Amino acid sequence: MQRVFRVLFFSLLLTCPACQRGRMFRSRFTMNVRCPVCGIVFERGAGEFSGGMAINTVATSSVAVSGAALAFFTDMPVWTLIVALTLVSVLFALWFYRYARALWAGILYLTGSIRED
Ligand SMILES: [Zn+2]
Image 1 (cartoon, protein in one colour):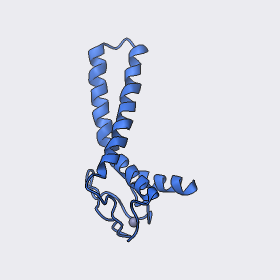
Image 2 (tube, protein in one colour; image 1 turned 120 degrees about the vertical axis):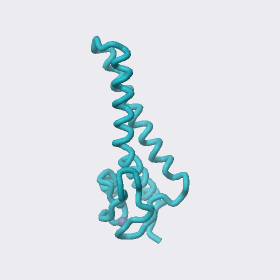
Image 3 (cartoon, helix red, strand yellow; image 1 turned 60 degrees about the horizontal axis):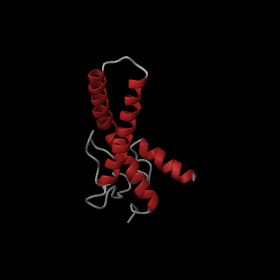
């Protein structure tokens, strides 16, 4: 169990889940194909990024639903709330993109889909 938390923690730091030293991203939206330190491939299959997209979708939806709950506690006009929620959701999804893909890479590593050759 400690290994699971360690791998997910380093994934959230955008660090390679295998060696815990190599950076997973070379820019804001570009993931390295291989770890620059140990050389493992972060996403082997073409469609493996979809897991990260799913994590991002669930997290963004949770933020949006939590924000929509504000409608019950404020007198904010509906259109203002809709615009604010849309803006917050888009910004959150863009910000969380790297963390979602890194988390998915960590999960793939934990399940053995990513391994050192
Ligand atoms: Zn590595």
